[in-house]
Image 1 (spheres, rainbow, N blue to C red):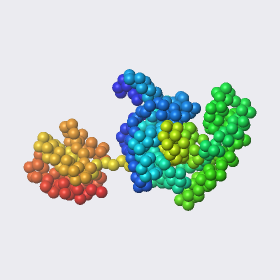
Image 2: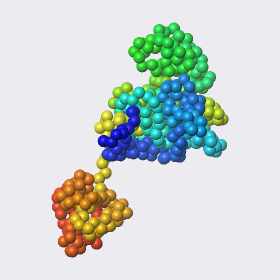
Image 3: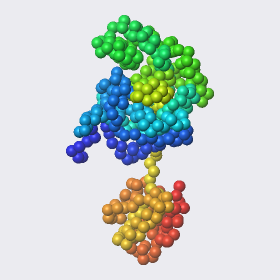
Image 4: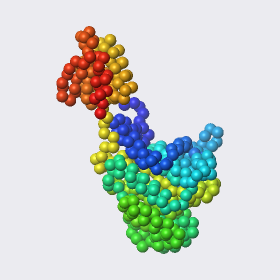
Length: 419
Ligand code: HAM
């Protein structure tokens, strides 16, 4: 081991497990591409102010968890704790909102939150996300939810549940907020929580402590206070989901950790993950564009956690990317054989056959051991006597059978055996 290790709350992706991460990223992205989402990539850091205004100054993400830094030039930056504010910022900057709407974008990358590390909760984690900007249409909310559920299913994940709620809009939420505050002020709560009632009362509903939970049992819920517009909108989203065969649970207590949400909000949870059960989440954010200085641009999106999706698959015993061993492993015995087989391996790879080579001048024993360990189906062994006869020994590593094949015919023969 070296003197250094990955910082607390982070970990490295190492083969063979890293293949599962790639497969999950790809598995989430594939349905998005088919649905017309274009790829967007933004910097790993932004002006800190974007998140103060976008994610919200009363959220844990901004007040406690953001990695902020001042550059030598005096800029106040933050490592991105989430993707939505950045993607919207980029779309506005590129004037995408002046073209055809909705603008549908997807992204994949690293995010940073200074959280207390535990299983499934990291300081550096990975999301694949999707945002549909500039349209207020229940079908768009439903489309995104269906795409997320289909992505999980295509990866082989089964034990996830979808929680659904509506957080109202700028008309009905303030009314509900006041009713909720009234109720919360009457409870027996500590200083910090009492302060939260005044700044972000909905977050109090998310308190996980038992003595708080008990008192919240009779708290007023948003669904009883939705205005007609929000109620009708939510009903349409629900109907479209039912028609698409998506099962969901109405969860009136679902509030999310970011301030920008309006109307549709949802979370995918997996019961095999312990306390960090959310594998993905999202919702509508009709006011975010204006919050960061843009024009009105009603939008909806989600982000799925790649790390937690991998953990959930593992909890179910599903391997999204089974080991992919080479078809052929080349074992040269001697200098000239090395040149010949290097040429063979190069050609096979160019022809689309996975092939590997015994590097490092191993003896025949070590090389054969490496061939077996690689998981290859065939070894091609080339010794001096073979070379003189213009053949190589083709060994089936499963049956142990071995026979000479002419060097000229070898590449064709192996390419034909490609699965
Ligand atoms: P979020 O719920 O904060 O939403 O994060 C989405 C997902 O990222 C979570 O469900 C979880 O799987 C994963 N995640 C979050 N924090 C961590 C962590 N510390 N360690 C491991 N995984 C984590 C958002 O980020 C919104 N931007 C989603 C969105 C997009 N809403 C609208 N558009």
